[in-house]
Image 1 (cartoon, rainbow, N blue to C red):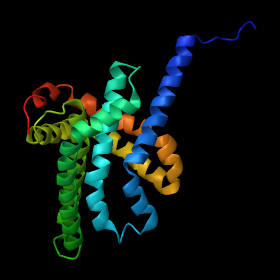
Image 2 (cartoon, one colour; image 1 turned 180 degrees about the vertical axis):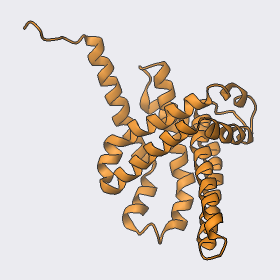
Image 3 (spheres, rainbow, N blue to C red; image 1 turned 90 degrees about the horizontal axis):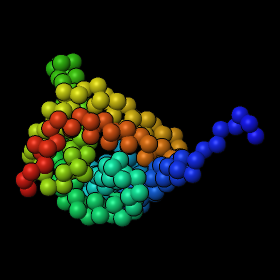
Length: 228
């Protein structure tokens, strides 16, 4: 039929590859985070937060690092094996991701306790905004740090933290966009967990990874050498 545009086999293959990347990454994230999801479904997060603070660094941080590694590998080779790359990255970076996730989670818990305490004092009006900004900076450092671990698994964690604090502030607009994407993911999970995990997670996390990777471009070579 004239006027109808026909797509090449390569176009269909590329589209299928992207869809497969998203769906499979979502499935792997769901499986990797299953303990956390079980706690969220079976209990009130307000009551089970001590368990959640343990599961976030132990479960979520390594899974995010593995997903970021998949995105990184796919960006250079669209034929990369998603499952193989995810599992290999999860194993290779688990200890570093766990350590980084534990440090970030611990800092956020301390800051949250400080916010609750400060709200009941005369200093609350001045202290709470400062504490909230610090919490956002810690969270941004953690997210970009996981992307750094995915890109440079041998980087020393103290170098990772120093670099990520710098780029989180330096590229604040990308950090804000990453927060927006994470906020959309949390909102989607709250409204429809199955839809968030099955469809929305990979695209939104890809935005977070892309922002982090772009922010890290000038400094990543300096963060890569060395070991912890």
